[in-house]
Amino acid sequence: MMKVIVFAVTFTVATATFKPHHHHHFIPPGPGDSRSPCPALNALANHGYLPRNGLDWNATEVVQTLKDVYNVDPSLGSGLALAAVFLTGNTSTQSFSLGEYSGKEAVSGGIGLSHHNRIEHDASLSRADAFTGDNHSFNATMYCNLKRIAAKLNGGAFNTDVLSLHRFNQYQASKVNPDFTFGPIQWFLGYGEAALSLNVFGKNNTATAAAFDSFFAKERIPDDFIKNSIALTPKILFLSALEVYNKNPVPIQGIDTLPQKLDGSECFILKLIQGTFPDAAQDLINYIANNTGRDLPANCTVV
Ligand code: HEM
Image 1: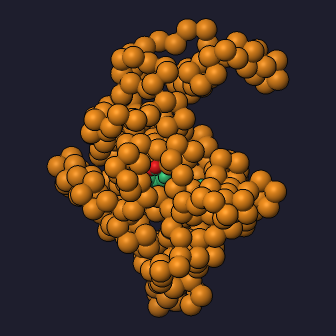
Image 2: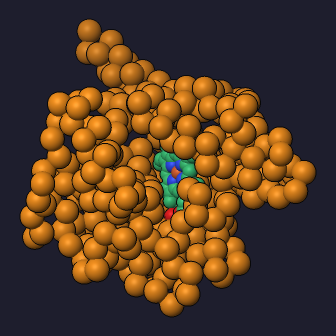
């Protein structure tokens, strides 16, 4: 009986770990393959879950793959994929491509995920600003800075304290960039990506050094990867992003002139709307109130 239990436990653990089908073995990109500033999408290409050349990824397939491989809830995955289609891809084919395109390819495949200030932004975790010339390749120096913070604050593992301080430092470093842009959209993206990394490659906002090294530096799904059993929803992601931000707040262009802690999602959405669409803010607030019955708070407490 004991043997049966041991076998059952071993079997369950063994089948739950990341065992890629041979079609999904890790193969680094070849000379003709396009890659993006997103380590998670690059990893999907490197494992062949989506076309390895990185071109013309269909949004519906992307959403399904994000769910199957990373357990990203489709409510979140479809928002990300549609943003990629509308901001960088081809709306008639509902697809987008990794990389940066111009000229002819732009007509069929869109302008590519690396295109600056669409989704790609300044003050990234492991990518230099577009101003320096390379906004898409993994930057080992920046990643080492992140690891150094992890070693100092958390014994080498990554959590919201570590990501928060690194994001803060990256923001400060980007101030020398004369084109530095960090408004509400970049807030969502920058802090959202920090939260994505912790919640997909870690659990409960904590990830091991080995998982991050594989994900960030090799763009390879860790060999012992087990996707989280609870799907990652926009709400979980948002609360995690807010935690990363609030530990070391920075000014958000168009919203704040001084660093402020944001005190709740409704307040943040209000500020986001006011910062992004100052002329239409009141109409949008009314629209939300009329259609959802939810009044956004008139005043937001600044902590
Ligand atoms: C359709 C889905 C997705 C799209 C279109 C997308 C797109 C992007 C883009 C364009 C960037 C570059 C931003 C920058 O300038 O730093 C980025 C960064 C990032 N993405 Fe994704 N992404 C997607 C899904 C995911 C998922 C599921 C994860 C989960 C781990 C993820 C993790 C990250 C991280 C950690 C970064 C920051 C890289 C860095 O700053 O060094 N992404 N993503």
